[in-house]
Length: 418
Image 1 (tube, rainbow, N blue to C red):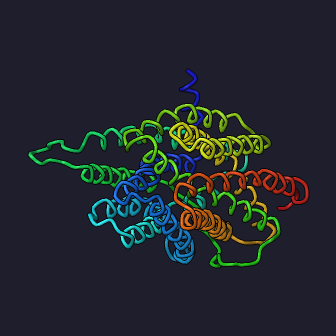
Image 2: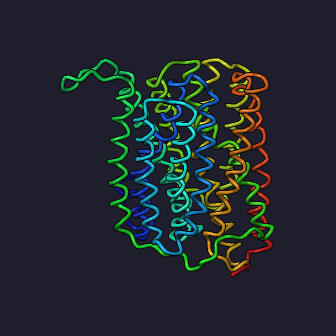
Image 3: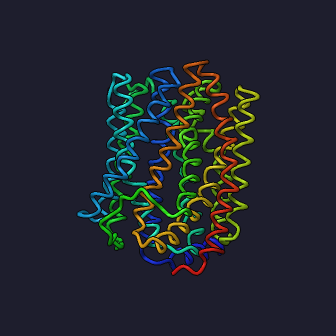
């Protein structure tokens, strides 16, 4: 009966919200492949953790550039078309990577950049349509629902893909003997099919198109400058959330099968927690949720640094799996509440802030990735895996007082902004 009540509550949402949630629910099936197994694929073919980091950095350059290009295209192309482009061609870019046999630095940089360029269209237009389609009171539910399915698919997809990759080598299908690379290729073909279904779901929605034709600004209100600082701190850790699990598991624990199993087990509890929090938590509870996630992640970083073993990798990955959706559940509604306020103060379109937010994230991402590369070059890759994570985990703790200050300003100094 409780489940029926949740279905009724979902069906009571506005059409735009339901369309976005169904679209993102489908594309969430593809994201674990992009975020987990692309890094594992590079690690397996090169044996170098630094190459995974280089790939990730190139990907983030592509994401930042796509935010700029997307802003230009929004003047002429419907946001729904750009969103669909990002969904579909993310899977195509991933497929290109898996069908290239010669894995070298040029291939890694090129495919990383291409994948970032395509996924960037997904992320920026997702933020924009969410901003237009939701209000502050409903965003906890929206991101809780999203996080539930992101976590759910992070259980199912890694386990399924990991099992396939662990067993495909040597299998015979229609007289052809398959190898591990064929397994990766099968996975990416399935990702393309799912992406097409997500685009079909999106096509059924009607969404607001940005009215402004000027999205490029360099000077902002002090409230948004603080939000950009918060974005940079978030960006510092984002790259490690994607690359560190695959590197640590392949280094200390095993192969892709173990990678999928660990992701699946760790995500089960988190999926339920984030949905319940999104359903019952109010805007005033966000900082408690935010702080909890930050301290859990820092605990995982400490465990990895002190133990630097299979046990440390297990603890870090479990903490990471718990941290990511909990953190996002509080972070993105805070970001959008800030955009709601600053866009009224400065009389600018919301995409102006989404664009600059992506650049703020990129600044942090680049700094985090370069920190790893420098430590690896000066000392060793093991030192980078051990201490770069600890440094960014400690810096993340600065996010909590900064986020609290942003919310305080909105709720006191700018509460009457209309």
